[in-house]
Amino acid sequence: MVYAIKTEIRDPDALEHSFLEQKTMYGGKDIMAGDTIYLFASENEGGSGLVARGTVIGVVAVPRKANVVRQTPRVTLKVRRTALSLRPLGRRELARHKEWDDGEPETELNFKFYRQATNKVVGLSDSAAAFLNSFFQT
View 1: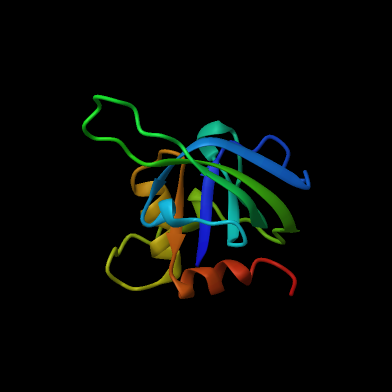
View 2: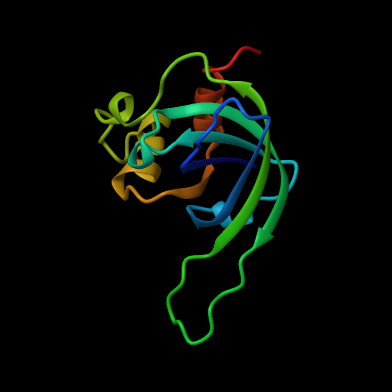
């Protein structure tokens, strides 16, 4: 499966990234080493949206806290960057895609990342993954 993460990314040019205790939603908890992941630098943290594509090289599930009933699963990830984005894709570009049931990949990304603007790891459909792949040289 293919995933995306929206979080603080201080150095998009770095060859490796570590993301500690990231919230998972929309299938993000199933991420595994070897999976492809698209990296979005969170605008909440001063970022610009899609910055890179990578391969997950390590995943550790964060243990749930005792005596807390509702918890969003979290993971710690290590990612090796494989490509840098050729053009921008972020909140501004996705904002007009608000028809939640139109099946468009842009709408899926807008819904998963910006409807609830918290940073998170999400699973992607094949069409969203193909759309994101078009932002990179093949």
